[in-house]
Image (cartoon, one colour):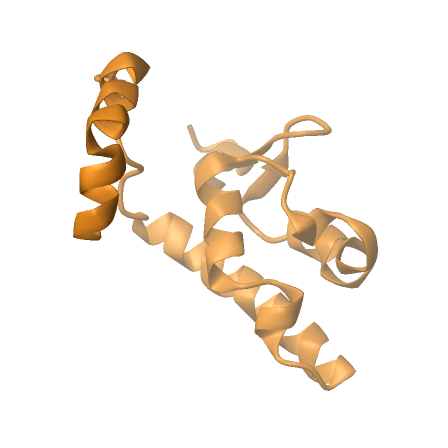
Length: 119
């Protein structure tokens, strides 16, 4: 932080941080497991194929970070599921092996053994 900013507003910034409280229950997301990595790779393949057909970079359609967030959070609020991206890849991504649409807003990773009735 610049020294002048610390001199001018340091005490105020510290007071704001102190008043905000701390979220001691916060736990960062864990590293993806092998199953999640496999699903991510499948999703990236769908995106890459669609992007190639359009003649654009895959990152324009959906970045790796966006796809990872979908897998980790299970939420469908990503731009991948809206507008032209939904038409291009969104529906196909929902059909990716291992993903299950739980509701209009949530996605879950499905264990293949459950789908096959082995558990």
